[in-house]
Length: 182
Image (cartoon, rainbow, N blue to C red; front, top):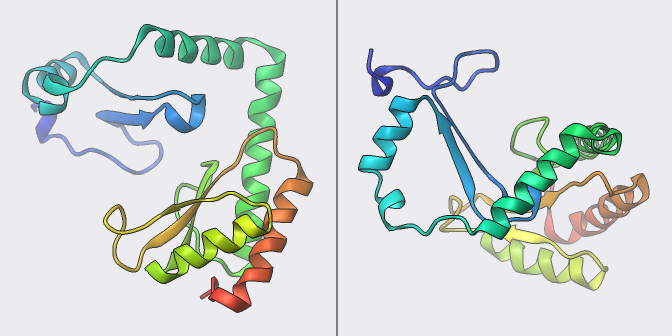
């Protein structure tokens, strides 16, 4: 079968034809990637408007990503940080769910979108968080559905349990004001 006739699997453990991702959250860099077999990449290079009209990644950014990946994959500190990131992600996601917040995304992802529901909530949420010393990233329509406004928390290996608990405290303070839980 041609690559475009095969099913792109979403389920874990299945063969995946195309993988896409971004470097912005993981490596603090711009850009992203698309990976696939030679036939897929050749097709995208020939037919994709984004490829034809986009600018390539700059060499310093490519070097930054390569250096970051090398450090993470080939050092004891990098491996420790990966374990810490996984632990922090499990803790933060688990606490949000346990407290009744609606979160999206893969259960292993350190990028944690929390639903704020309405456009009106995003302004109040952002302002009240900032007043409490918490800078947040908010996303709303047209990047989401009209009722899919969300806050995006990006967990890192450098966050401590105290950092995450403080965020959870702030959310608990704001819930009665904004209605963050279902």
